Structures are given as structure tokens and as C-alpha cells.
Image 1 (cartoon, rainbow, N blue to C red):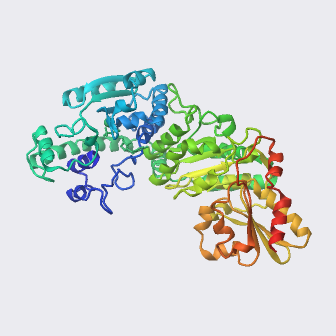
Image 2: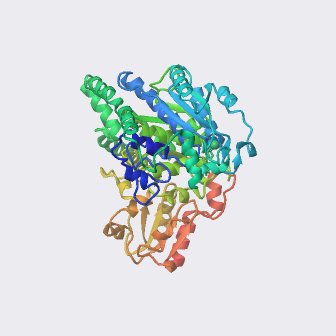
Image 3: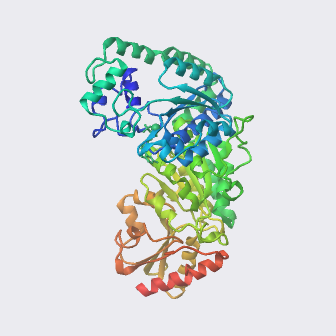
Length: 594
Ligand SMILES: Cc1ncc(C[n+]2csc(CCOP(=O)(O)OP(=O)(O)O)c2C)c(N)n1
Ligand SMILES: [Mg+2]
């Protein structure tokens, strides 16, 4: 309610009094937790504790990067955070604080609502961390004030803006000041008792009724709301004085439009790849793609959670983001998957930056709350998840994802790409780096894969989600549907079946969400009724049944070759044998259904 009432008071058109009265009602902008997509002035969605403070690291980094690119006259702002005890208790806050301290994000200012209360009761029930010492240990500037004293707040903010370190202002406050619930956990929730509401208003000297704002108060607030207008006009003049090229670049990146050369560059890269037919792990295909794409963009910012050499996320042209190299576009996030993903979201929300970041696919779990919020908040963060199956081999079951594709596919508004070769990887990147409102998960292999797209097509086939890679010779009796590294296995199974005169089609399905979005006529062309179907993916079956038994398929004419347990530690080829994800097993399963 704090943000909504401030927006109303300062005169935002999107927040008339009606919106305030409709708090938490259907269709209102004043949702139960602020949603970035419901109002222009709501910069991020908050609600899951700790995400906001981690977003703010991305906001502050984005500001530094853009300031280095466009100069102080064009980009020069602070990032302010109000954090509660709960935000600071969440583990992600530790990752965020450490990153901000390491990178001297001096324009980041956190105000801690130090009220010693959470939902279950006093903070002391579960915590005795010295937050001031914790922030200092992470190289923050810390100021301690009475959070109810306007002069102290003002002085602290002025001091914070001058600091060359990020600043935490510890604001000692009383929850539900003036109410009988003051300083108790009851102060957190509904405080609707009429007598107590009157007491709380009296404590502030407030005499008017509900939803009544005295005219002089409203106009004083509106003056504050107008304060930025002159600054805005002055900024526009400075912006107009910039070269046309720079202005266009700034606006393009801010709008999230792809560079003009993207499409032609991808086509040329695909053509060359189909001709050379390299055998590459798709994580290496991804690096090769980034090598040609990053130079086209000024706004891509790459990174990895301490697996740069494994995730293949760094290209030579990016430079490394650091205290003395603010224009660097590669971030060493350290072992902080969750903080990385949330900060990436912050960068995307800031605008003008397209973040991508890598870790092992299995550690989707560690980044997951922020990946879900990317989808919910409609930001196109790109999660580069390498080592995407038992195919990673010796690191064993702790590192071998089996359920992670299903988890990401279960998330609304998320593209999950599992490309089969370098061509599909390039196509996936083209989509991911053109997306404006949907995050992408790129599921990439550690092990080498042959090029399966040997015939060059200008068209981005991955955009259709699934397509016929190899059609049946003779009567079509079997359709094999596969993704990523299992496309090679499906093609070999097809050879076995065709050798026995069984006409077999192979469908590559790099993105289920995009296939689901195709019209029925196209889906029917790829998956017609009649033939038996076998799905092949070194992961759990969950999510596959629509394509196997649905979409004109039948339960007694469909099967799946994949994983229904955790993996094991061994060389990759042996694991595929052990778990029976082999051309022979795929062919046998198909024949058993005929
Ligand atoms: C990740 C997450 N876990 C749990 C919750 C539920 N929750 C909402 S507020 C809160 C704690 C509130 O404590 P504090 O941050 O100190 O806020 P205060 O009550 O002082 O306003 C909890 C546990 C949540 N929103 N997000
Ligand atoms: Mg609290």
C-alpha cells in the first residue's frame, strides 16, 4: 500500500482514488503484491522476500553499464530499496549484498525497515545476526537512524548518495506505530479494529475520514510529483544533443528490438554450419553463436555462476564488468545462481540491457524462484543451462538433471529450448534474443553432437517448435519425436526401422511451447493421426503425453524412452546404454506398438 498511496498522492494518472479503494480486488492495479506489468511506475514485482533486493543489484549494474556507454549526461540515477527483516533473512540477500559490495555499486541505497518483527513474532525467535556488521563485512557503507525521524532520513539519504560504496540505512522503526498492535507481529497484517485505527491515526495527528485526503496535503504531494518535470525536459535536451546513431541505439535497446543485422547474421551462420557440419556440444554451439551475435548488440550482458569455461558464455568482445571497467559486459557472478538470476531480471527490468547467464542445468533449482519471476514479470532473461542430462557423464546423479526440463516447461510464459545441433542452437538464440516478454531456458549438452540440419534453410525452423527432420520412406508407420542429444538417437533408430522396411519419420522438437502455439493444421502436418509414436528424451516423461497420446495420438500406440530415476556416475556412452536410451531400444519400442 505504501507504493500505491505514494503514486496516488504524487498524481500518477494510473492511480486515482478508485484504485486505492479497490485494493486487492479483481482487475485493480493495486494488486496484493505490486506487479510490474500492471503500472508504469512499478519497476519490479515484489512479494517473494529477497527478490527485490537482489533485483536491485541488476538495476544498479545496468545503470553503471549504460552510463559507461552513453555518459553521465544521459544515464545517471540511483537505485533505492526498502527491505524488511524478512528480505534480509532470505539467503538470496546474502548473494545480493556480496555482489553489490564487491562491485562497489555506490548508487545502490537500501533502507532496512528495522522493526524487529516478522510474522511469527520478534525477529529474535529465529535470528540474531548483526545486520549492520554483516553489511559492513560485505564492504557497504552503513548508517543507523531513527526511521520515524524525517530529518534523520533526509540526512542519511544525502550522505548515502555521496558514498563511494553501496549504502545500507538501518532505520529503527516500530511496526503499526500508535496501534495497540505496535511492536507485535499483529502489526504485520489486517489492522481493522475501529478503535485501534483511530488510535493509530491519533498518533500521527490525522483527523480526516477514510480515503479523504485534505486538499492542501494532496496539492503539496502533487508539487513533489511534478518536481521531476524540469529534470525530464533537461534530460530530453541532452538526449537530443546526442548523435543520431547513439540515440537510435539507445532507443532500440530500450524497446528491446533486435539489431537490424540479426536475421541476416543468423542465416549466414546457419548456412556455413550446415556446409561444415561440425560435431559440437551444443554448449560450444552456443558459444560460437554468441561470438557472432554479441558484436551486433550493445545490450547483451553475459555471465556465469562460476562455470564460465563450462557454460561457454563468455565471448572475447564483451570485456569484464568491474569497478574500473563499468562498460564490461561479462559478469563473474560467483557461486550465486539465485542472486545471478534475480539480478539478471533486475537488468532486464531496468531496460536497455539483455542479460543472459549460465550454470549447470541441474542448478535450475538454485535459480528457480527468480526464473519463475522472470516468466511472471514478462522479462526476456536468458538462462543458459548446460550439462543438460546423463550425457554429462562422470559427475553423476547430483549433477544430472532428469526433472528440470519438466519443471521449466511447467512454468507459464517460458520458452524451453533443447536444440539438437549448432543450427538449432543458433535458431534458439535468435528467438531468445528477440523476445520481449518471455524468458528462455537454453538446455545445452556437455557432450559432442553431430550436425543434423545438413540442408540449409533460411527459415527459423525452431520458431515452429517442432518440424519434420527426416521423413518416412515408404508407408509412414512410425513417428519418432526427440529433442537435443536424443535427436541423433532417433535418427539412428530410424535407420534401423527403415532397414526393416518400416517407414519412419523423425520429428525434432526443440521447443514444446512454440509448437503448442502453432495452428492445428501445422501441428497435424507434423504429427498426423495413424503412425505409432515414440518420444525420446533423456529426462522424465512428464510433459510429453500431449505429443504422444494427445494431438491425434493414442495411448496404446505411444511409448517413451527416457529417464524415470536419477542417473549415475559413469562415462556418458555407458549411461545411455545402462538406461536403455539407445537406437535399438527406440526401434524395439516402436515395433512393439505396430
Ligand atoms: C519467500 C517468501 N517467504 C515467505 C513469505 C511470507 N511472508 C510475507 S511477509 C513475511 C515476513 C515479514 O517480516 P518483515 O519482512 O520483517 O516485514 P514486517 O512484518 O516487519 O513488515 C513472510 C514470512 C514471502 N512473502 N516470501
Ligand atoms: Mg519486520
